[in-house]
Length: 118
Image 1 (cartoon, one colour):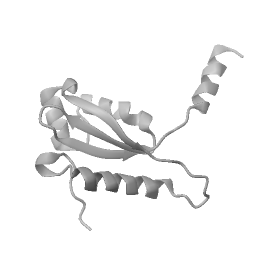
Image 2 (cartoon, rainbow, N blue to C red):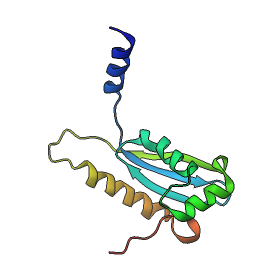
Image 3 (cartoon, rainbow, N blue to C red):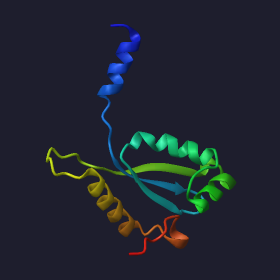
């Protein structure tokens, strides 16, 4: 098998993990909690911040002022996949994100998240 085919096969075998992450401002302790169906996309989030295109304005402003070295990215929880045909990954991911939001309360002076109105 040639190298290109090997790489393609390896890529197909990589497991995609969904989960909840936090971006922490090490200067002031503020955090942003988010979730993604693919934790490998965290590099894309860093790129969005570095290119001044993240949708959270306050996080983006502080990233631009302080630079990437002032922030750390951390996976808080990986979603456990289930073989149940009725398992809804999106709902399950939303539930664990909600749990972390309730636990860490990353709102106002503590973080960058906005409370969702019901």
